[in-house]
Length: 99
Image 1 (tube, rainbow, N blue to C red):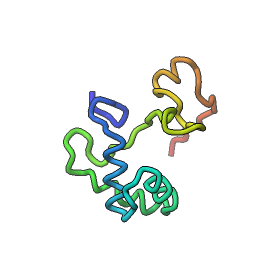
Image 2 (cartoon, rainbow, N blue to C red):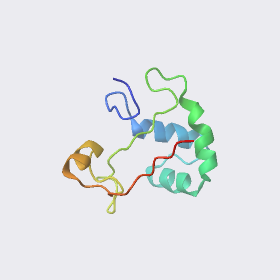
Image 3 (cartoon, rainbow, N blue to C red):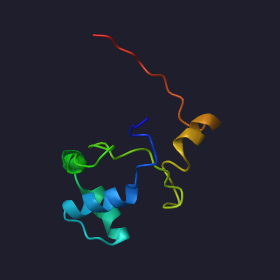
Image 4 (tube, rainbow, N blue to C red):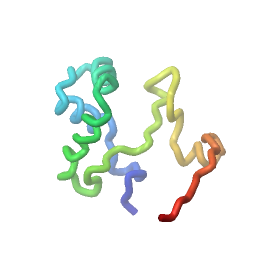
């Protein structure tokens, strides 16, 4: 099955560097993160088309990716499937609305 949650075809570091380069960010690791964080979300979202040509991934190359080894305060400390199986996620009510 191919989806934005499969990991075998994902290279988040490569995609982030390509996106940063396309948006004019310096290519050093510390500068990339600062630069991407400083950009409006609309700029980032509009550039997802950059990856349309990739086989199997299409425009949706982004997926939840553990950042525990990149940060002292990670957003996603381990694989999302592992976190779900451990119950380590925010348990919030989800409203289903039919129009």
